[in-house]
Length: 338
Image: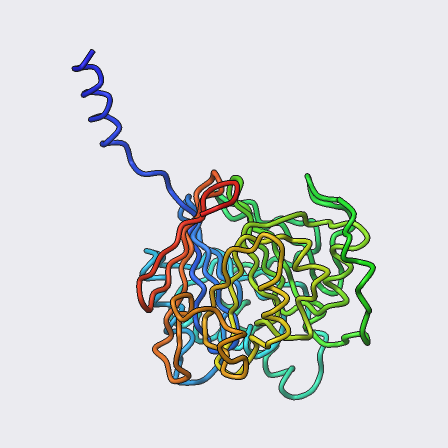
Protein backbone atom coordinates (compact mmCIF):
# COMPACT_ATOMS: atom_id res chain seq x y z
CA UNK A 1 0.00 0.00 0.00
CA UNK A 2 2.83 2.38 0.94
CA UNK A 3 4.54 1.64 -2.41
CA UNK A 4 1.28 2.34 -4.28
CA UNK A 5 0.82 5.68 -2.52
CA UNK A 6 4.45 6.61 -3.24
CA UNK A 7 4.08 5.73 -6.92
CA UNK A 8 0.80 7.66 -7.15
CA UNK A 9 2.34 10.78 -5.63
CA UNK A 10 5.39 10.48 -7.88
CA UNK A 11 3.19 10.14 -10.95
CA UNK A 12 1.10 13.16 -9.92
CA UNK A 13 4.27 15.22 -9.53
CA UNK A 14 5.21 14.45 -13.14
CA UNK A 15 1.86 15.58 -14.54
CA UNK A 16 1.85 19.03 -16.21
CA UNK A 17 0.21 21.83 -14.26
CA UNK A 18 -3.28 22.81 -15.39
CA UNK A 19 -3.10 25.54 -18.01
CA UNK A 20 -4.55 28.93 -17.17
CA UNK A 21 -6.12 31.87 -18.93
CA UNK A 22 -3.56 34.67 -18.59
CA UNK A 23 -4.60 38.31 -18.93
CA UNK A 24 -2.22 41.27 -19.08
CA UNK A 25 -3.70 44.69 -18.36
CA UNK A 26 -1.07 46.82 -20.08
CA UNK A 27 -0.36 50.41 -19.10
CA UNK A 28 -1.06 52.64 -22.09
CA UNK A 29 -1.54 55.74 -19.95
CA UNK A 30 -5.32 56.05 -19.92
CA UNK A 31 -6.10 54.08 -23.08
CA UNK A 32 -6.70 50.35 -23.38
CA UNK A 33 -4.59 47.37 -24.34
CA UNK A 34 -5.60 44.09 -22.70
CA UNK A 35 -3.89 40.88 -23.79
CA UNK A 36 -5.68 37.54 -23.29
CA UNK A 37 -3.70 34.31 -23.74
CA UNK A 38 -5.93 31.25 -23.73
CA UNK A 39 -4.98 27.88 -22.22
CA UNK A 40 -4.76 26.61 -25.81
CA UNK A 41 -2.11 29.24 -26.60
CA UNK A 42 -4.21 31.55 -28.77
CA UNK A 43 -4.08 35.29 -28.12
CA UNK A 44 -6.61 38.11 -28.21
CA UNK A 45 -5.63 41.75 -27.76
CA UNK A 46 -8.43 44.17 -26.93
CA UNK A 47 -7.37 47.59 -28.28
CA UNK A 48 -3.89 48.87 -29.01
CA UNK A 49 -3.33 52.10 -27.08
CA UNK A 50 -2.23 55.45 -28.47
CA UNK A 51 -0.35 56.26 -31.69
CA UNK A 52 3.00 58.06 -31.77
CA UNK A 53 4.96 58.51 -28.55
CA UNK A 54 7.95 56.83 -30.23
CA UNK A 55 6.06 53.55 -30.31
CA UNK A 56 5.66 53.48 -26.53
CA UNK A 57 2.39 51.56 -26.40
CA UNK A 58 3.28 49.05 -29.13
CA UNK A 59 6.51 48.44 -27.23
CA UNK A 60 4.67 47.79 -23.98
CA UNK A 61 2.26 45.40 -25.72
CA UNK A 62 5.17 43.58 -27.35
CA UNK A 63 6.88 43.26 -23.96
CA UNK A 64 3.77 41.71 -22.41
CA UNK A 65 3.42 39.36 -25.38
CA UNK A 66 7.04 38.27 -24.99
CA UNK A 67 6.49 37.62 -21.28
CA UNK A 68 3.46 35.50 -22.22
CA UNK A 69 5.37 33.57 -24.88
CA UNK A 70 3.21 35.07 -27.64
CA UNK A 71 4.81 35.63 -31.05
CA UNK A 72 1.68 36.68 -32.94
CA UNK A 73 -1.74 38.08 -32.11
CA UNK A 74 -4.52 35.80 -33.29
CA UNK A 75 -7.28 38.38 -32.76
CA UNK A 76 -7.04 42.14 -32.34
CA UNK A 77 -10.42 43.40 -31.10
CA UNK A 78 -11.05 47.11 -31.59
CA UNK A 79 -13.75 48.31 -29.22
CA UNK A 80 -14.24 51.66 -31.00
CA UNK A 81 -12.48 54.22 -33.14
CA UNK A 82 -10.88 56.60 -30.66
CA UNK A 83 -7.18 57.34 -30.65
CA UNK A 84 -6.44 55.74 -27.26
CA UNK A 85 -7.96 52.44 -28.43
CA UNK A 86 -7.28 52.06 -32.17
CA UNK A 87 -4.45 54.55 -32.68
CA UNK A 88 -1.66 52.08 -31.98
CA UNK A 89 -2.67 49.55 -34.66
CA UNK A 90 -0.02 50.43 -37.30
CA UNK A 91 2.82 50.43 -34.76
CA UNK A 92 1.64 47.16 -33.22
CA UNK A 93 1.43 45.50 -36.64
CA UNK A 94 5.02 46.58 -37.32
CA UNK A 95 6.13 44.57 -34.27
CA UNK A 96 3.84 41.53 -34.20
CA UNK A 97 1.92 39.63 -36.90
CA UNK A 98 -1.86 39.93 -36.56
CA UNK A 99 -4.05 37.13 -37.90
CA UNK A 100 -7.56 38.62 -37.58
CA UNK A 101 -8.96 42.07 -36.84
CA UNK A 102 -12.38 42.28 -35.14
CA UNK A 103 -14.56 45.40 -34.94
CA UNK A 104 -18.14 46.68 -34.94
CA UNK A 105 -18.07 47.98 -38.53
CA UNK A 106 -17.15 51.41 -39.94
CA UNK A 107 -16.35 54.46 -37.83
CA UNK A 108 -19.45 56.66 -37.51
CA UNK A 109 -17.50 59.79 -36.55
CA UNK A 110 -16.40 62.30 -39.16
CA UNK A 111 -13.75 64.99 -39.44
CA UNK A 112 -10.05 64.98 -40.21
CA UNK A 113 -8.87 63.15 -37.09
CA UNK A 114 -11.54 60.44 -37.36
CA UNK A 115 -10.81 59.93 -41.04
CA UNK A 116 -7.06 59.63 -40.38
CA UNK A 117 -7.66 57.03 -37.65
CA UNK A 118 -9.99 55.03 -39.90
CA UNK A 119 -7.58 55.17 -42.83
CA UNK A 120 -4.59 54.02 -40.77
CA UNK A 121 -6.59 51.18 -39.25
CA UNK A 122 -8.19 50.03 -42.50
CA UNK A 123 -4.92 50.06 -44.43
CA UNK A 124 -3.20 48.01 -41.73
CA UNK A 125 -6.11 45.59 -41.41
CA UNK A 126 -6.26 45.01 -45.16
CA UNK A 127 -2.51 44.43 -45.35
CA UNK A 128 -2.06 42.26 -42.28
CA UNK A 129 -4.92 39.85 -41.83
CA UNK A 130 -8.54 38.80 -41.95
CA UNK A 131 -11.41 41.05 -40.91
CA UNK A 132 -14.40 40.05 -38.79
CA UNK A 133 -17.36 42.38 -38.13
CA UNK A 134 -19.43 41.24 -35.16
CA UNK A 135 -22.79 42.01 -33.57
CA UNK A 136 -24.26 41.26 -30.13
CA UNK A 137 -24.69 37.54 -29.58
CA UNK A 138 -21.81 36.61 -31.88
CA UNK A 139 -18.75 34.80 -30.58
CA UNK A 140 -15.09 35.45 -31.33
CA UNK A 141 -13.54 32.01 -31.92
CA UNK A 142 -10.53 32.17 -29.61
CA UNK A 143 -9.50 28.55 -29.04
CA UNK A 144 -9.89 27.59 -25.39
CA UNK A 145 -12.19 30.50 -24.47
CA UNK A 146 -15.83 31.47 -24.85
CA UNK A 147 -15.83 35.09 -26.03
CA UNK A 148 -19.36 36.48 -26.44
CA UNK A 149 -20.10 39.90 -27.94
CA UNK A 150 -22.58 41.72 -25.69
CA UNK A 151 -22.56 45.15 -27.36
CA UNK A 152 -21.51 46.52 -30.74
CA UNK A 153 -22.31 49.44 -33.03
CA UNK A 154 -24.89 50.89 -30.64
CA UNK A 155 -26.80 47.64 -30.09
CA UNK A 156 -26.84 45.33 -27.09
CA UNK A 157 -27.90 41.78 -26.35
CA UNK A 158 -31.50 41.16 -27.37
CA UNK A 159 -31.96 38.24 -24.96
CA UNK A 160 -30.21 37.23 -21.73
CA UNK A 161 -27.17 35.00 -21.83
CA UNK A 162 -27.57 31.45 -20.41
CA UNK A 163 -28.04 31.69 -16.64
CA UNK A 164 -28.77 35.43 -16.74
CA UNK A 165 -32.05 37.33 -17.02
CA UNK A 166 -32.98 38.13 -13.44
CA UNK A 167 -34.77 41.41 -12.66
CA UNK A 168 -32.39 44.20 -11.66
CA UNK A 169 -33.42 46.03 -8.48
CA UNK A 170 -31.10 48.95 -9.31
CA UNK A 171 -32.97 49.93 -12.50
CA UNK A 172 -35.53 52.14 -10.77
CA UNK A 173 -32.92 54.60 -9.53
CA UNK A 174 -31.28 55.20 -12.91
CA UNK A 175 -31.87 58.42 -14.85
CA UNK A 176 -30.94 58.41 -18.52
CA UNK A 177 -28.74 61.22 -19.79
CA UNK A 178 -28.54 62.82 -23.23
CA UNK A 179 -27.96 60.49 -26.16
CA UNK A 180 -24.27 59.82 -26.76
CA UNK A 181 -23.66 60.12 -30.51
CA UNK A 182 -19.94 59.32 -30.34
CA UNK A 183 -18.09 56.08 -30.95
CA UNK A 184 -18.10 55.42 -27.20
CA UNK A 185 -21.77 54.39 -27.34
CA UNK A 186 -20.91 51.95 -30.14
CA UNK A 187 -18.19 50.17 -28.18
CA UNK A 188 -17.71 46.48 -28.84
CA UNK A 189 -18.14 44.81 -25.46
CA UNK A 190 -17.24 41.22 -24.66
CA UNK A 191 -17.84 38.67 -21.93
CA UNK A 192 -14.87 36.30 -21.78
CA UNK A 193 -15.36 32.96 -20.04
CA UNK A 194 -12.96 30.14 -19.21
CA UNK A 195 -14.83 27.39 -17.43
CA UNK A 196 -16.47 29.03 -14.43
CA UNK A 197 -14.35 32.19 -14.67
CA UNK A 198 -15.97 35.29 -16.26
CA UNK A 199 -14.61 38.75 -17.03
CA UNK A 200 -16.46 41.65 -18.70
CA UNK A 201 -14.90 44.34 -20.91
CA UNK A 202 -17.25 46.98 -22.36
CA UNK A 203 -14.63 49.32 -23.81
CA UNK A 204 -15.88 52.91 -23.39
CA UNK A 205 -19.59 52.09 -23.53
CA UNK A 206 -21.55 54.94 -21.94
CA UNK A 207 -24.22 54.80 -19.24
CA UNK A 208 -27.41 54.73 -21.33
CA UNK A 209 -26.18 51.73 -23.30
CA UNK A 210 -24.96 49.99 -20.15
CA UNK A 211 -28.44 50.48 -18.67
CA UNK A 212 -30.00 48.73 -21.67
CA UNK A 213 -27.78 45.69 -21.05
CA UNK A 214 -29.05 45.16 -17.52
CA UNK A 215 -32.57 46.65 -17.39
CA UNK A 216 -35.23 45.60 -16.75
CA UNK A 217 -33.47 42.23 -16.86
CA UNK A 218 -29.77 41.73 -16.26
CA UNK A 219 -28.88 40.10 -19.58
CA UNK A 220 -25.24 39.52 -18.61
CA UNK A 221 -25.50 38.04 -15.14
CA UNK A 222 -22.64 38.21 -12.63
CA UNK A 223 -18.91 38.21 -13.25
CA UNK A 224 -15.76 37.45 -11.34
CA UNK A 225 -13.83 40.41 -12.74
CA UNK A 226 -15.04 43.73 -14.10
CA UNK A 227 -12.71 45.86 -16.21
CA UNK A 228 -14.04 49.30 -15.35
CA UNK A 229 -15.80 50.83 -18.33
CA UNK A 230 -14.27 53.95 -19.92
CA UNK A 231 -11.18 53.89 -17.66
CA UNK A 232 -13.30 54.68 -14.60
CA UNK A 233 -14.81 57.89 -15.98
CA UNK A 234 -18.09 59.22 -14.65
CA UNK A 235 -19.85 59.03 -18.04
CA UNK A 236 -19.83 55.24 -17.70
CA UNK A 237 -20.08 52.53 -15.06
CA UNK A 238 -23.21 53.62 -13.17
CA UNK A 239 -24.41 51.72 -10.14
CA UNK A 240 -27.19 50.10 -12.18
CA UNK A 241 -24.70 47.90 -14.02
CA UNK A 242 -21.70 47.68 -11.69
CA UNK A 243 -23.69 46.51 -8.68
CA UNK A 244 -25.79 44.14 -10.80
CA UNK A 245 -22.63 42.48 -12.14
CA UNK A 246 -21.57 41.79 -8.54
CA UNK A 247 -17.84 41.49 -9.40
CA UNK A 248 -15.40 40.00 -6.94
CA UNK A 249 -12.53 42.07 -8.32
CA UNK A 250 -12.37 45.22 -10.46
CA UNK A 251 -9.44 46.25 -12.64
CA UNK A 252 -9.27 49.96 -13.49
CA UNK A 253 -7.27 50.82 -16.61
CA UNK A 254 -6.99 54.49 -15.77
CA UNK A 255 -4.16 56.95 -16.30
CA UNK A 256 -2.66 59.24 -13.70
CA UNK A 257 -4.82 62.12 -14.94
CA UNK A 258 -7.44 60.29 -16.98
CA UNK A 259 -10.25 58.20 -15.55
CA UNK A 260 -10.32 56.92 -12.01
CA UNK A 261 -12.77 59.65 -10.97
CA UNK A 262 -13.88 59.73 -7.35
CA UNK A 263 -17.50 59.07 -8.34
CA UNK A 264 -16.69 56.06 -10.51
CA UNK A 265 -14.23 54.66 -7.97
CA UNK A 266 -16.77 54.86 -5.15
CA UNK A 267 -19.45 53.11 -7.22
CA UNK A 268 -17.08 50.20 -7.76
CA UNK A 269 -15.77 50.32 -4.19
CA UNK A 270 -19.30 49.97 -2.76
CA UNK A 271 -20.38 47.17 -5.11
CA UNK A 272 -21.84 44.25 -3.11
CA UNK A 273 -19.37 41.40 -2.68
CA UNK A 274 -16.34 43.27 -4.05
CA UNK A 275 -13.05 42.15 -2.54
CA UNK A 276 -10.56 44.50 -4.21
CA UNK A 277 -9.93 47.18 -6.81
CA UNK A 278 -6.64 46.95 -8.73
CA UNK A 279 -5.51 50.02 -10.68
CA UNK A 280 -3.09 50.60 -13.53
CA UNK A 281 -2.34 54.08 -12.15
CA UNK A 282 -2.79 56.08 -9.01
CA UNK A 283 -5.51 58.63 -9.89
CA UNK A 284 -4.05 61.97 -8.83
CA UNK A 285 -7.39 63.79 -8.59
CA UNK A 286 -8.93 61.10 -6.41
CA UNK A 287 -6.69 61.40 -3.38
CA UNK A 288 -6.00 58.56 -0.99
CA UNK A 289 -9.69 58.11 -0.15
CA UNK A 290 -10.56 57.35 -3.78
CA UNK A 291 -7.66 55.09 -4.71
CA UNK A 292 -6.78 51.53 -3.83
CA UNK A 293 -3.88 50.94 -1.41
CA UNK A 294 -0.52 51.34 -3.17
CA UNK A 295 -0.02 47.57 -3.03
CA UNK A 296 -2.80 47.17 -5.62
CA UNK A 297 -1.61 49.94 -7.98
CA UNK A 298 0.78 49.09 -10.82
CA UNK A 299 2.09 52.64 -11.30
CA UNK A 300 2.08 54.91 -8.28
CA UNK A 301 3.96 57.80 -9.93
CA UNK A 302 2.79 59.83 -12.92
CA UNK A 303 6.19 59.42 -14.60
CA UNK A 304 6.24 55.64 -14.60
CA UNK A 305 7.81 52.56 -16.19
CA UNK A 306 4.56 51.20 -17.62
CA UNK A 307 4.07 48.30 -15.21
CA UNK A 308 1.19 45.94 -15.93
CA UNK A 309 -1.26 43.91 -13.89
CA UNK A 310 -1.48 40.20 -14.68
CA UNK A 311 -4.38 37.87 -13.93
CA UNK A 312 -4.19 34.08 -14.19
CA UNK A 313 -7.48 32.18 -14.03
CA UNK A 314 -8.22 28.49 -13.63
CA UNK A 315 -11.28 26.81 -15.08
CA UNK A 316 -12.80 26.24 -11.63
CA UNK A 317 -13.08 30.01 -11.11
CA UNK A 318 -9.97 30.46 -8.97
CA UNK A 319 -7.76 33.32 -10.12
CA UNK A 320 -4.63 35.14 -9.05
CA UNK A 321 -3.85 38.82 -9.66
CA UNK A 322 -0.24 40.04 -9.67
CA UNK A 323 1.15 43.57 -9.62
CA UNK A 324 4.30 43.63 -11.78
CA UNK A 325 5.66 46.68 -9.94
CA UNK A 326 6.07 44.97 -6.58
CA UNK A 327 5.33 41.30 -7.47
CA UNK A 328 2.50 41.27 -4.95
CA UNK A 329 -0.03 38.52 -5.72
CA UNK A 330 -3.41 37.68 -4.29
CA UNK A 331 -5.45 34.57 -5.04
CA UNK A 332 -9.25 34.57 -5.09
CA UNK A 333 -10.74 31.12 -4.55
CA UNK A 334 -13.53 29.62 -6.62
CA UNK A 335 -16.98 30.53 -5.41
CA UNK A 336 -15.93 33.62 -3.45
CA UNK A 337 -13.56 34.43 -0.63
CA UNK A 338 -9.80 34.66 -0.94
